[in-house]
Length: 196
Length: 232
Image (tube, each protein chain N blue to C red):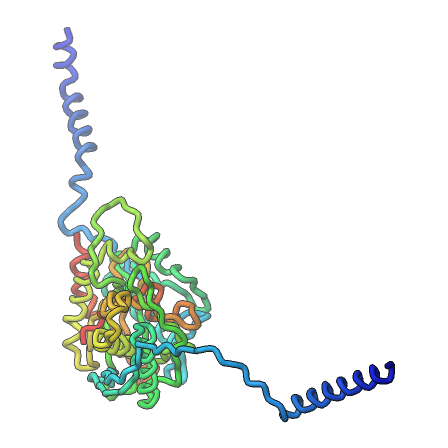
């Protein structure tokens, strides 16, 4: 009786070991039933838009058409416009390579906050050249922000903000931009100051 | 009896009355129509000991503007003896933010002129005039007693500022020496916080020694302002 008992135990462990070996080496594979996963489609699809970028070239305004993808979120789209403006000015060798860190719109005062990684103004330039650089950015925004309307009509908060940015704050690394001649301690009106 | 006393001392009494009347009303006679009034101009040379300013060939803006202001001061004082000219800094002095504005406001300057130069790359030198605004839709401050933010001090005399700037512009436009480009109202930092009519003049220099050629044209442009203000 004892011998039978031991033989049974050995046989059971043999089966168990063989089964474990087979599972470890993928001879036996267990497939568990999967849960149903539904994928939500994002209704805010990006669309391609052509925008006009303006810059001042000594005596006159020059504009160029650039294609960007707009997402419908105003601050993201403004960021793309400004980066396109910075890239164009870098190509034209008006400014050095500068990028926009952050573009945020205030909910309370319709002010736009732009933070760059470097000062966009060249200190050696005349005040007028510095002024026209800022004016070219303002002109680019004025001419393009209205045209960028979110396609998702359910996004009413974004629609209310469209075209209603009235002032812009210029920052470098999230601190007020400094220049010996132009005062950036107050926000600049989007209409600018220039007579041109 | 009193009548007899009055009659006796009538001559002395009448002389005394005349003297008293003279003392009382003499201040009126001291102001003639041709009395000359002291007019104070504050000249601000751009830059300071800490901020050398823009590079101009072999020198910096701070040195050239100071030289220019000293020459202009000397010329103004010779031409208009009743004009007092004060400079905002001396060589080697470092200025703090709003220090010039405080100085001008305490001194109650009648006119503030800020001088700036940059390196000109075009054929002819260019000249610009600026006055300070920080809001396109501004209203002059007319109340004598009011709390005003420092960056709205320019609104106290904004109309006079624009008047002076236009007078300067009319003269400067006629010059053949340079191209007068624009008179602009912009947030020009060196003019922040100044109560007096304040204007900035920016000129492009091809060579650093060319600054001296602008002394006489600037003096001529100030003529229309100084002639009307140095007479009562």
